[in-house]
Image 1 (cartoon, rainbow, N blue to C red):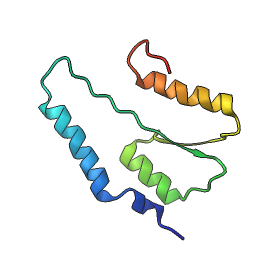
Image 2: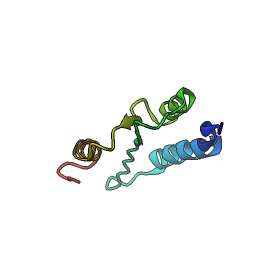
Image 3: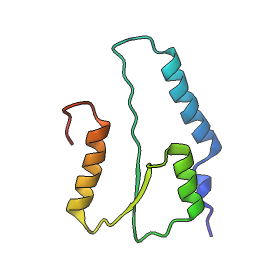
Amino acid sequence: MYDYTKLLRPSLRDDYGKFLQEIGSTQTDANFTLKISKKLYLADSVKVLDEFKSAIRKDFGEDSFESIDFGQQIEVADKINGFLDKASPEGKKH
């Protein structure tokens, strides 16, 4: 069986974290805003190892992973668009 936790290479996680810290600590321009939102949606028919779910949630946030039924296209579109709306600046709709 393939070890999917290797997809989250430590260097990728570390580099991502360092990048966010550096941007936050060195940016002094009041007109600059960086907002990053991330979420992994997987078909609920896909069996995901608990270790992979834990690694995703640990490194990217507790709510960064969700299994959904892609057969329910309208509901899925509403869910994903709702996530994007919450993550987007005021008034911006997807």
